[in-house]
Length: 293
Image 1 (cartoon, helix red, strand yellow):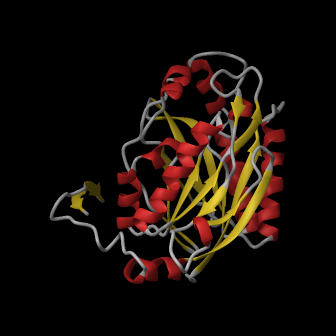
Image 2 (tube, helix red, strand yellow):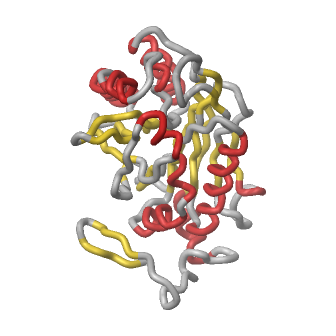
């Protein structure tokens, strides 16, 4: 692995599509474009597959979109292996062991697939689709470094990012889906705080536009961005790059992973190493055993 990871985030327009093939073709455009920039990890937004939802209500929505899952994952496997890029397939409503989960799939360039379920479910997800929460913070190895995926609302809970960092993640990818600027700012502000608390990078990708006739997914606001710690070695304001709000686009950024690791022990402030476990303790289950940080 090298010390540089090139990332890209797609700000995806949630316009209606007629078929799964049409949707896949839109995604393939961005994957090919990212590959042209030699991107290592490409991030799509949370629930960006919702244009596939029928104009129905209740659990039948989730059941119908789940029918598209095998074809979607096969298509992204083909993209990842063809273009030799790791793709975070935003998130997608998925039935798993009899429960409806909001899952982000990491499709690696070797064709393997890993999964991170959303751990905190918003009221609208419960009311619109009866989504249930996942139970574990995962950390994933990629060709260029170790990453974690915290889906939208999950970034607002600081203990999750701390667990991910303790498990070795240098970059946290945050696919999100917010309807109003206020909701977006909650996600972005909390992501910026996680960058400071854990000396990490956060890559955010959100959806824009209007999706007529899909309950719980009608309007979208986003300004996708790459955020950094706030210290002398990093960009001013802790913003590596950001998109213009409200338009479909893609942003690309190089991340210096060695700089993150050095800043944890040698930065102006050292919020990771200066934690006070003598005053408080965060416990989590790592590889089946309880661990504390």
